[in-house]
Structures are given as structure tokens and as C-alpha cells.
Length: 219
Image 1 (tube, rainbow, N blue to C red):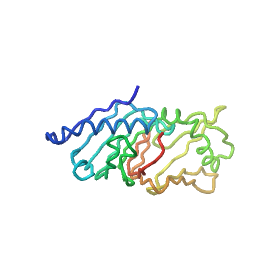
Image 2: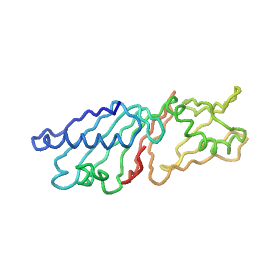
Image 3: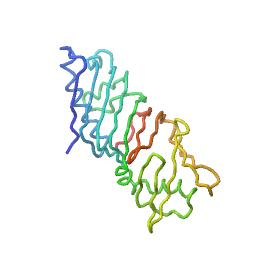
Image 4: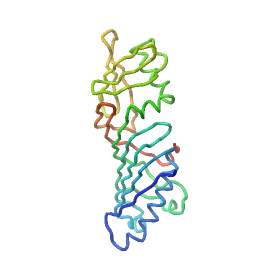
């Protein structure tokens, strides 16, 4: 089923009510192109009528659950952006909805089940990092998450608990076991700025900012 979007207008002025619903419908159409799956999607707009007057949308928040984006499963995601310069031909489903890179606030939750579902697509990159700590690893069968770290199950009863920390807004580190020379750094890229990265029983909660660029490929 396509994602269901519940639209709420924060400024219920008559001039906004005439444009907010078609704009929300267009954004729903665009969001459906970006993700493989999404549930309970909600779009909150503020000042929708300004898109016609100035080409700028003052505020948008999009949230959803059970999202699959580029084969990565996420339990919950909330994206918030302000002062979006709109591409007006998008109102006729032409091109992208925005013209410039957007700095978007993100809050996300990933569960053990999310990561385990994503493992077929994450195997290669995860194993490449973990082999610096555990050279014998060839595949990861599943993971579990606890406040003290992530446990990697590799089969035949073997598993490894690895603490993981946010060391900068663009990098995580896997803490090395006693026999390893140094921690392993995971660079997240310049389009990511993570402010919080917290492990809880069965889940990871993170928040920060990402840059979304016009013309980015759909999921």
C-alpha cells in the first residue's frame, strides 16, 4: 500500500487552506518516489501559501514509521526543514520540489530487527570494518543492541561485543578489544552531522542534521 499522509495546517487561514491540500498531495507523490516502504507518514506544513507569493515554504516536517530507504530499514524517522526554496514547476510534477541543497534536522530510531533485515545489503561494508578488529569474521548472521555495545553473531556459537561511540559529528568508532592495536573509525561523510547517538536495549536513537541534495536518486 502507498504511504498514508495525514496533513495538518498550523495556520488555518483561508488563503492557506486553498493551497495546502494540493501541496501536501504533491509532496506525498514525491515522498512515495523516494522510499520503498513507509507507514503512518505525516506531513506538517506552515505558511504553504507563501510558495505562490515568494517561492519559499517556511516550514515542513515529515515523519513516518517502518521506512525502507535504499534497502535500509528504519523504525521511525522525523525530518524537519525551514525556508525551503521551492521549484515552482514541481507544482505540475516537473522536476524536484527544491532547487538547493537542504539542511534537514533528523531524528531516527533503528531497532535490532531493522538492522537484521538490512544485513544482506550491509554485510560487505560492516565486515570490512569488523575484520580490522576480528580478522576471522566472514559473515554476520545477526546483531543485538545493548547500552554497552553491539553484539555481532557470526555463527557456530561465536559472537563479539563491540562498544561503539560517536567521536565527531561525522564519525563513529568501534572500540577495539584488548588484543587489537586501535579502534576502527567509521566516517559518515560530509553531508552528515550527528549530534546524538545513543544505544538502548534493542535500538539505536540518533539525531542531528543531514544535507539532502536536489536530484538525489530515489530509494
